[in-house]
Each structure stands twice: as structure tokens, then as C-alpha cells.
Image 1 (cartoon, helix red, strand yellow):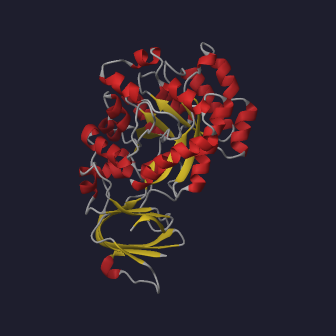
Image 2 (cartoon, helix red, strand yellow; image 1 turned 135 degrees about the horizontal axis):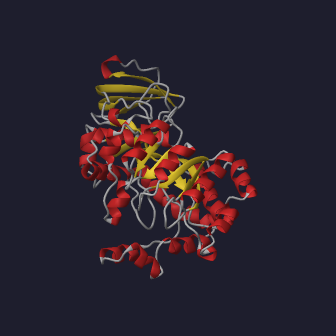
Image 3 (tube, helix red, strand yellow; image 1 turned 120 degrees about the vertical axis):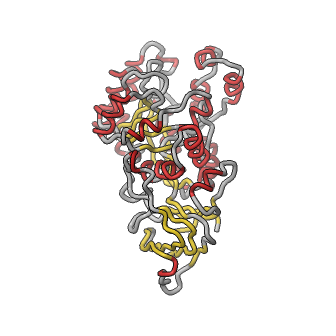
Length: 410
């Protein structure tokens, strides 16, 4: 049981998915209070109307803002090794292809992950997740995709699941063996897919509950449309819900594929077109935008305002990974969405809570400020959402609450 009172601003974020045009329509309750019991929010209202149960602990918000726990719904945060040399190469004007030709790119991370044990992956990734927690993130999606062998992909998923048992963070896992074709299968992508989509592999993932989702990097340099469809349809047969890396580098129909296979989300969308957005809207596909990735790479952002105007629900995530977005801060990502995508602070908040929950199939209990929802809450030391995202260079988190329990700060 916990009461939070003297809340300066309490955004009443509705459950997701919130359509794009409605994402800025969030009521802000002033001088508010709330109660939690048994891990759920049980009362929300004016501070003057609060009736404290006997012996109920009280957290004084001191005029600060309380928001739902943030949800980072697209990350690659389990990895080994770093690639800062590529960061410098990009600054010097080298292209992705030139970096790959010089021995860089995703294969550097693949080699490091293959050499690491499961225990080492846990040790390397734990501090990243702790720092994310410090930014107010209570739920994180983690993809495999840096092993590119059956053994190493399963190792990554098991490491991610172990982290979820060690930390307050709720971990959601995604099978992304179809990230790229490894060098040992060069020019043989179908043979590689035969291996990672084998019945015994997917049965193991299903039976051990190692992943909830199946993802594919649908791009000319990775997997084309027919192969991407094969990945997603095969995963569906084993209970893995489809997700896609879609239309990031080129517009090749990946977003249309997302609508056709009933994907829960299509992620990136830097090159999405209006026809594909209409299909996404009709099919109920969440658009997961990754502004920190474009910021990190110095490339144009996804057309967020056009996507919002198409009434597609938009989520935001860090895409934290060692190559194209070494960004652990979801609040910084939201500020980038505001300054470079022209999303409003309230739209960004909804994107990182209600719609991020919907992109992970958890909108029934996460991401909204409603009675009955899981009490994942963040107390900020600022009076408003606008002030929070106006100051991206620091963490404004004063207290972090997971399932009604204070797990950091206060």
C-alpha cells in the first residue's frame, strides 16, 4: 500500500493504443493524489479528497509530476563489445557500406556476442538496464539478433530473461535471428533461415517461453519481402507475434507486409509512404519510431507528424544498440522527438507509455494512469511534462515505483 500526495501534475494517460490524432488530448489533474494497493492503482483524485487508509505509507510529491512508468519497446540492449571507432568513421564521412567493408558493422558485435558466455552477457547488460531504470523506464523490450547461430540467439534470449529476474525492470523478449545473414551463410540466406526457423528451435522458444515476438529486418541489405514474410508467418505458427524493422533505409513495402501479417508493430518507418500508413491504420499496427537512431546516425527522421495525422498510434523507443543508437535514455529520446519530429511533450509521453505498452501487448495493465492498472509510476522533480522534456541533460526521476513498491529514489 502506498499513497502519493501533493502531486503538482498528474497526466491521466488513457490506455493504449491511442490513435495519433488523439495523443495530445490528455487531461492533466492538478494538486492530485493517488493510492495503490496490491500492486495496482486503486484511487486517483484531488489531494483534498484523499482519505488515507490506516498505517498507509505516504510519499510527498512536493509539487512534482507523476507519470506512468516508461516503456522502452524497442532495444538491442543485450550485447558485448562497443563500436566507438565507427562513430568516428561516420563523423569523418564514411558510409555504412564503407564501414562494413573496413571490417566494421554488425559483424563486430556478432563476433563479440559469440565469444561471450551467457553469464558475461548478463554482467555486461545489467548496468545498462540499471541506468535505464534510473531514467524512469520500468519495462524494456530486448531483442536477440547478435548471435546469428541457433545456440547464440538462444543464449541472448536466456540472458535477457535472467536480467528480468534480477532487476525490478519487466523484460519482454523478441526473437530477431533474422537480423542479417551471417558471413558463414553468405549468399545463402534461405539456408540460414532454414536453420533458425527449424521446428525444434521455434518449439524450444515456445516451450521455454524465451520470446513473445518474432522480428525481421526487412531491407534489401538484409531480408527481402518473401523471406521476411516467411520469418513472420513461421513464427506465428509457434505463437510468436510479428514485429518488423520496416522502411528504415528504403521504401520496399515492409510496412505493407506488417499490415498483411497482422504485426503488432512496424518499427523505424523513416521512408514510410501514405498508402502504407492507411494500411497500418486499418490493420491496427503500432508505429514505433526511433528518433535517437536517426539522431545518432545524422540522417532524416521518420515523418512523425504525417504518421500522427494518419491517425496511426505512435510509440517511441531508444533502439539502444552499439552500432546505430548507443542511447540508453528514453527521456532524451522523447526530447529528440519533440525538437526534431515536432511531437508535443504530451504526445511523446503517450508514445512512451500507453502506445509503447500496446506495442508489447500489455495495454491491459501497463502504460496508463487509470484505476486498476499496475502501479508502475515515476515521480519527477519537475512540475510538468513540458519541464521534464525541456531539460534532457539530467535525470529528473525522484522516485520509481514498480507494482506499487518504491524501487529507487524517494
